Length: 103
Image (cartoon, rainbow, N blue to C red; front, side, top):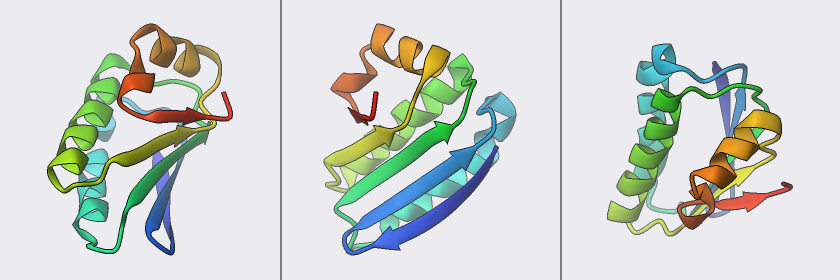
């Protein structure tokens, strides 16, 4: 997993490339610092270049969501999920935690 963080007014966009697996737990946890920016009202994950997410990675997204809510960030979006990643997100009702865009 590789990622890049872009900031636009009031939003951070996290673009992830590659698979997201348990081995990426440490890197994924470092994304929590995005939630410390007081100006951020929205966080968007761009998963257009992700073709596989294991169950541990889904747990990492749930953890991120929980931390975001504790910091009053209510607008969290996953954009560009496709294929098996999207199928599992819909099956597990991820759309109740994150807004799903371009799906």
